[in-house]
Length: 197
Figure 1: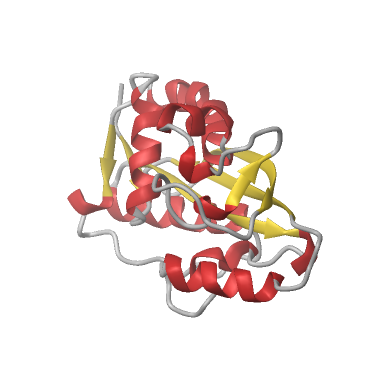
Figure 2 (figure 1 turned 90 degrees about the vertical axis):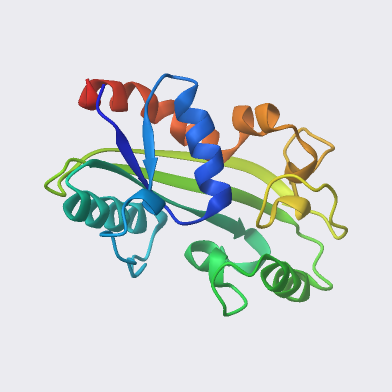
């Protein structure tokens, strides 16, 4: 089976994707092994568009099949924000503490805490053409008090529907089973096997 390049520099996402794909015997490489792949500006209006941009750019630069990922949090009371700007909601990219503080400030005084995590995956062949896409979501709500030390991003504040624990309190296996990324990766695994042969 050919190797797939995971087109993300987010260590949390990379760790989860490697585990999710390794469970299906799919060999992965990271961008750390491919300095020829430059940064990709996330100019898409949707998670799907950004996942496609990342996959196509990484595939063309590396000559490998590449899997692009984009994901984030949508909060009903904030009209879907932070959405595609989840990683840079407070301004700086990837500052989890600042992003969570901005989320709490935006939700102050609001009783509607319904939210969902969304994830889009896109697979590009070496010429950059997108050959498969999948999506996953996880419904839940936002709590006021952060709990747990696992996960990353908004996980300490996000409680999946039907659960009492935050994403950050779940074991990696529990999170993989019900998370947006786990669901998108589960749907992508047979497509990866088909294209990577």
